[in-house]
Length: 251
Image 1 (cartoon, rainbow, N blue to C red):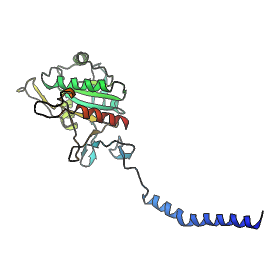
Image 2: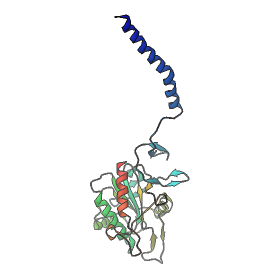
Image 3: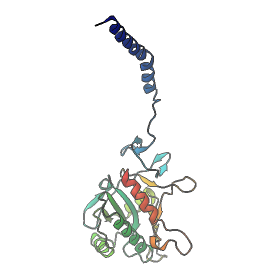
Image 4: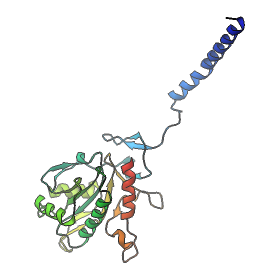
């Protein structure tokens, strides 16, 4: 090997040595000081309510005291007599409603709209619905089963649930902030919200933002998609509910 070749190798080695001395400590320092560019997309740790990194949509989290709000733990009996808990919905995107089978006013509208949503996502095994009756004295599993058959509820992840009234009302009013109450002065004997809550695969309440940049929190379930608006000109929100379900299914 010629001296010229030796000088070339020596020169390359010298350049590598200088690079290591100058740049490697800077790279290590950036890592140690967390100065490396990071993905701002977030997901929530299922057990701690803390944010972890993953590919997320632009849907907002409902935050309480600065913490994303999770679905509270629950355990009820569904229309097939099975015990269903919040853990059965982990890994699924689902819609929450509170209703009762003898409701003469808003519940039929809400559930027809949810059946429309069900049919739209019929090919998705990780989509579901959680329907909680606010009249458990009447709404036994057998009654709920007949109600499901009547409305064409076929999604195996759509659970119509009954259980202790106190627990159901606490879940509605405190867990989801979806107003529910007994009221003998109103038609049907119960008063409750006509809104839906949307839950992501990790059990967090999600929604799109309004024109002011704040989470919408809930979706109006009282106007059919085909109607467009109600008599007061309020627009239907089933279309945007579908759009947001699709976003969460991709997360």
